[in-house]
Image (tube, rainbow, N blue to C red; front, side, top):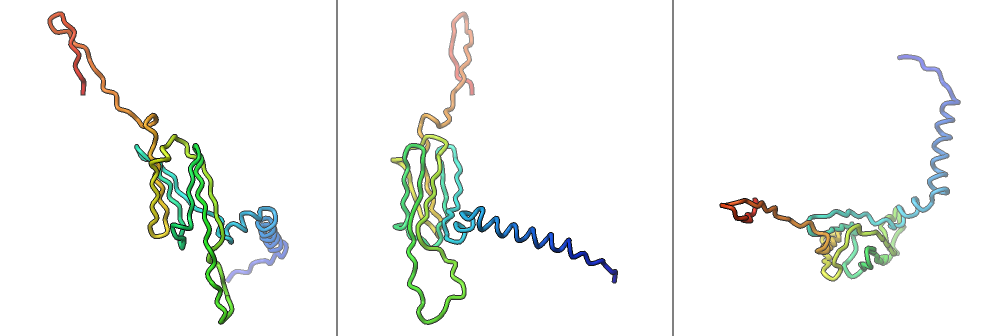
Length: 160
């Protein structure tokens, strides 16, 4: 066993840093603290395939009729409301973290999409929104043709 010198000043600095972080998280940036505890954060994934833009949002416990999706120009908004279940009158809560209330998330879609052909599916608490890309932005294949001279004539041939 080795003896280690006790330095109370270094422990107070550590405690001071912890207190600073606590006050900063709850008073300087209260929105982060409140959103995490009120269920106001809607985690999403957005990716694109060759033909579509796909948005996936985690909405555990929500029903499809509690979710509203709107697309105006290049702005997508997903919002909804989840009502609180009846509170238990028989006992006391020790912990209550299940979320309820309203949520809203707005994001910009980086490419042009056809909103009239959008499809939304809800499966196991995950909303999957498929937005077909506009024809103008889809990549198009262009075939290269080579011109060959055959007995003084030009003949066009498609190169593969």
